[in-house]
Length: 362
Image (cartoon, rainbow, N blue to C red; front, side):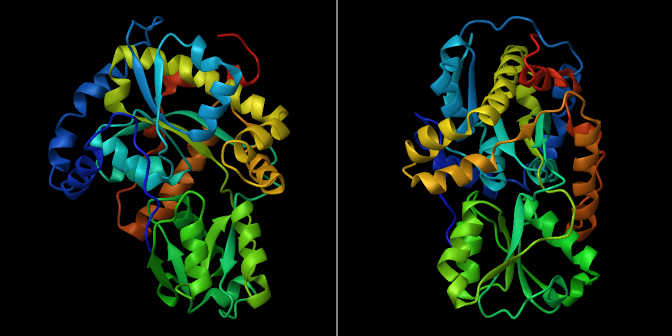
């Protein structure tokens, strides 16, 4: 099934060809990429400069954050320029990083891990999680109309959509472990999901897979609305976390002192943005999801609430443990090396976004 084509930054010209070529050569150039990691690593030990020199541009892929910044006029307050890109979802962000056309990406637990496994060193510089994470899941399991799955135990012997580069892959493996179903007693169908989950919903509706993790927002509601009368259903996955979100950046971007200085300011405003969303859910629904994306207001409210009630922690110990759990789940299943999750975080940025979200001046 076709994936949603990302919209690259303005002025990218022949960018699509660059990405295709860069993706095809990913493995061939992995050794060379590893050879140059030393220089960025040394630069990452230096303090972040206090001032941003003139002419700095950050290329950022986060459409919701863009609307929040522009709606509040924050983009005009920055001492640098942001070049926004409609690039969302782990696979597209990884491709853009590899092509060198994106500086800042947003993703769940797995995309930063997978980027490193793909030979693209990245660091997490901000983290968010549900404030009410004990009471809600970001994803549920969509069940195909004719799959005859009523409980998690019924997943045995079924075809399950699986994306090793996205959080959906972690959800599948953790669900099978919790249900006591060995990996060889299901068929994992490798299928990247679009950020909205339409690829998985379509696969379920067509009978291409029996089960798939889908977003517990408008995606799940539409799936039930459209296919529930035909027998489609959803199941809650076991009580493990699936809610974390990361701002992550290639190490080579962080090694640029000018961009590092700009990133410090960017995540201050990003932290403010998370707090603003928490207290302006209706405004986000009407202005962005209804006004900009053209959704009916009822649907817009569902999506706005999905990204609201977020906490931006000032300390990252919990975030590191969360990422380590994802690594420990996927590494043995995908035959990847185990990573120390602490190495994924640039702790020079720890506390910056969290303090901003709480209204604490830098």
